[in-house]
Structure formats: C-alpha cells, structure tokens
Image (tube, rainbow, N blue to C red; front, side, top):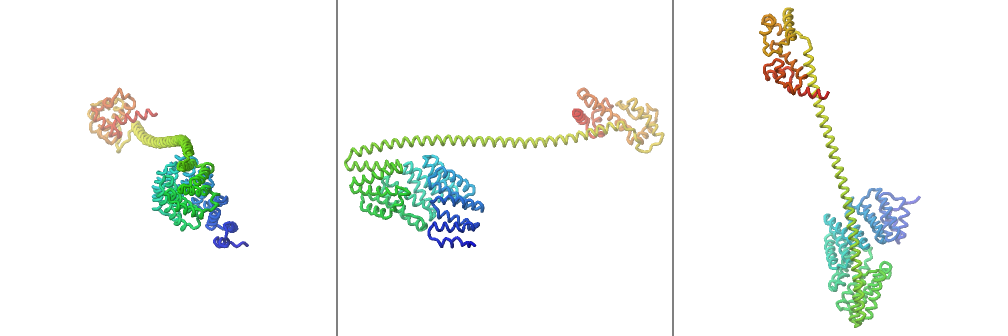
Length: 569
C-alpha cells in the first residue's frame, strides 16, 4: 500500500529540482483540496522557464476553479501569461493577458493588474505600436490612481519611462523613472525589483546624456537596491544587476577622465561575469567591450578603443538590431577618429550616422502615421458599435415605454367602459321601471270601499281617455265639474286608492308622458322646456322638480343618457 507523506516531508528528502518534481508527481494523485493545490504550485515554482511550467499552471487553474479559489485563479492566469511573455510569444501574450485582466477586474484582484498591463505595454512596444502602449498605460495609471495604489502607479510610471526610452526621449523617460521610484518608495514592497530596474534605465540614460556624475549617483543607488532586494529574495540571482551597475560606473569614470577607477570597475565586471549569460542575452557579453572602449578612449589608446567599439557596433547592427544604439556607438567612434586625427574616417562615420538618422526618422514617421491610422479606424469602428448599441437600447427603451403606456391606456379604457356601462345599465333599468309603471294597474294603497273605488275608476278613465292631465289649468275643481262628484269624494278616493293627493296623481301621468316624449321626439326640435309645457306643466322649474322627484334624475340627464344608450344599440 502506498504511504502518502506530507508534501514538505517528501520534498525534504530530495536535493535537486528534478528530484523534487518527481517526488511531488508520485504523491500528487493521492492529494486533495488545498494539499493538491499547494503541490501544483510547488511544481510551477520548480519548473520555471521550462515547457512543464505551462502544463502545471494549466493543471493548477483547473484545480483552483473546481475549488472556487478566485485569488488562486487570478495568480495562475497571470503566471500563464508570463510563460508566453518569457518566450516572446506575442500573440499568446495578448490573448492570455487580456483574459487575465478581465478576470482580475471582474473579481477586483487589483494586485495582479499592473503586472498584466505591463506585459501588454511591452509587447505592444515590441510590435511598434507605441500609441497603443501609451493608451493602455494611461488607462492603467488612472485606474491605479483611483485605487490609491502606490505600487501599481509605480509600475505604470515605469512603463511610461520605458515607452519614452524606446522613443529616445531620455529627458521624459528620466522624469517618469524618478516618479516611479518615488511612488514605489511610498508603497514599498521588499520583494519588488522596480527600484533596481528604474535605476538601471536611469544610469544607462545618464551615460548617453553625457551626465557622468548623475550616472555614478544612479549606479550607487542601484547597487544599494540590489543589496536590499537580495536580502529579501535570496533565491533570486542579482549578479547580472551588479554587473550592469559596475559597467555604468566604468563608463562614468572614463567620461570623467578617471581611467584608474574605470579599470577597477571593469575588473569587478570580469570577476562577476558568467559566460552562461550570453545564452540569454548577448548584450551582457559586449558590455565589457563598451566599458573597455570607454576606458581606452580615456587613456588615449584609440586603436584599442575602436576595436572594442567595432565589436559592440557589430552586435547592435547584426544581433540585437538596435538602430538607436548603433547610432550612439557610431557617434563615439566618429569622435575617437576625430581625436585620433583621422578626419576622413570621422567624416564618413558622421555621414553614415546622418543617413541612418534620416532613415530612422522616416521609418518612425511612417510607422507612427500608420499606427495612428489604425487607431483612428479602430476607434471609429468602436464608436460606431457603441452608437449602434446605444440606438438599439434607445429603441428598446422607447418600445418598453410605449408598451407600458399601451397597457395602462388599455386598463384605463377598460375601467372607464366598465363604469360607463354600469351607469348605462342603471339608467336603462330606471327607464324600464318608469315605462313599466305606466302599464301597471292601479293598486289600492289602503282599503277603499266599493263606493271610493267606483269614484276613482270614473276619474281615472276620464283622465286617461280625455288626457285632461295635459291641461295646465287642471285642478280638483275641474275634476268636480267634469265628473259631477263632490270635491271631498274625489279627494278621498284618490288618497285611498293611490296614496297621494290629486296634484301628485295628475303629475304622475304628466311625468309618464314626458318620459315618452323625451324618448320619441327629436331633441333639436323639441327642447325640454317645450316638452314640459306639452305635458301640462305651467313652468320649467316645476317640471324639473317633479321629474327629478319621480325618476331621480333631471330631464336633461335622462335625455342625454337615453340618447347614448340608443346609439350603442
């Protein structure tokens, strides 16, 4: 049975990185959760710079995703982008760095952002897209400033410095590197290499700006930061930075005409130099030629100086293809030829320099023009996309508002129709009630005797047959005269059979007639006042009071609702 040892115990038994990797791979299938995650991270650290590093990084990403470790995934995505960055796989850097930036922004992992943006900035510079690099740097700086992250601001200011350095704008580059150091000092991280890198650039630029004293000051600061960085990162090899610092000192001492001090720095360079550096970057090898060329120039040994500078120039022209550095070395060689007295060679060197400068300026101009055109077209396309998206959103918003308005209007119309319909039904019921009451037989209210009923029947036939209720002058006396019955008998018969007085009894017939006429006659030809007179009422107010008392509504309202009801049906 396989016994799974703790990770640290398993590694403690091994010495070389390869042995440690093999030990981890043996126990890896048995590990779960945080133990497996830690094991994969150790594998990544043990295989830095090898093809296996990327493989283990992908395994680590899958593991932290399954455990929903957001910070771990952010770190791994950055590490994966760095593996492509180290191999100058520019297209892959763009893909994976952009993915990592989106992830870190989404989950607010701001401590990874500055490093990822620096990767993009450097690769855009490598492709000659300086304006694109500047734009990313500006966006990143505003983001870091809003977060008040001093270290991130330092990294972006360093990127600005590198951009201006590549454009040979040394004064601007110097200003940005100094600002980067100041920001990094406020948010100092002991394990950061920002200080060393900035002083590296500052020292180099001070040499070519003919500021040897500044170069010495920067080189001394660089040496101090190298020691501080090594104390906090003992596993990192800082000898290459020591080598560079001594090369800057050698150049500065030579320019100050202090050849003994320059030679001392060269000797320290030779003591530090590691031949394996040439495999990573050949510039480390020819830096000795640079220092010796300056030293022999200071001592007046021009032929030796030219020999070393020719070797350095060959490297810039044929290996690194650094045209800017080639121009600087040609200028130094032209100066040496001039001091040597070989004016023809000096003039030829100056002429070549001028031609190269013109060619570089033209190439740079066309490259920048082309980049500006690409940026303009890209921005134009992006703005068109944004405009179309805004237009689509606007249409969607308008459609939503219209839809909501239509729903509300429909509901309002439905409610209005419902209440209106209810009112119309109520009025129709009222009309039917009134019309029905005109057809209903007279129902005695009290208990009249046969004599009272006979009198009432004679009176009612007279009123109906001769329509005497239409006469405005009809009174109880008129009924006495027409029937020959005494006043008291008629009044008693109406009261007992109808439960009302004689006037109300006559008005009941008049109101029934008014309802009939209002329904039948054209309102434009027969106004309400005229209908009241036609029905036997002496004046308009009496008609209105009697009609409303009987029906519950005024004659005008009754006619209006009756007209609407007739239109609907």
